[in-house]
Length: 299
Image (cartoon, rainbow, N blue to C red):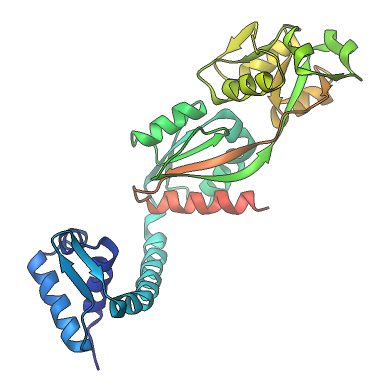
C-alpha cells in the first residue's frame, strides 16, 4: 500500500483541530479538498477514521490508533524543518523580551551575552518591567517572552510559567544597624523599624505583605521605590532595612557597605521564571533564546 504523505499530513491536522474547516485554514487549503483527501485515505485504509457530526469530527478507535503513529511522524518532520529553518533565521530578526531587574541580573544578562555572541544579527528589544507589567506586556503581545521574578500571580492557559532558577532575598541594613547583627529577628521586630521596599504594584511587595501578615505583622514601608536597584543605595545611606536579592547585595556586603541581618524565619526562596503565551508561536530566534535560558538554569 502506497499512501501519499500529504494524506497523512492532512489527517494529522483534521485530528488535531477536530475540524475540517480549521484544518483547511491551518493548511491554507479549501475544506472540500480536505474532505476529499480524508475520504480517499479512508478508502485506501479500508476503515472509517472520523465520526462526523454537526459539532465537528471525532476520531474512531481506528483513527485514534493511526493518529498515535502519525503524530510522532509529523512532529519529527516539524522538528527537522525547524532545525533547517533555524540555520537561516538566526542570521537576522528581533526578539522582544519583558524582564524584571531580578531576572535580568540573576540569569538573563549572561545568557544574552552568549546569545549575541552566537547570533550577532538578531536584535534584542528589552523592556525593564515589574513582574505584573512584564506579564501584561506578554498578554498584549508587546513581548514574546517574559523573564521575571516570582510570584507571577495566577496564570491560566494559554500562559505558562517555567521556573528556571531559585534565588533568595537577604535582609540588609546600613552600618548603623550593625547592633542588630548576631540576633535572629522576627517579622514583628522588623515591622517596627524603618523599611524600604518596592511599591504596591510589584509582585515583591505583595509577596512580603503576605509573608508579614502570616507572621502577625504588617508591612508598612517608610520608603517605596520604583526599581530594585534604587533600594540598595538607600540602605547604604542608613535610611532603613530592606529585603534584597542576594545577587544585588553580595558586593555591598563584602565591601561592608551594608550588614546582613539574620531572621528567625527567613523568607522562602523565590524563582526566576520564564513566562510565555503558548497560543502564539515563537519566532525561531525566541525559541533559541528559550532553549539557552533552560540550559543555563540546568547548570
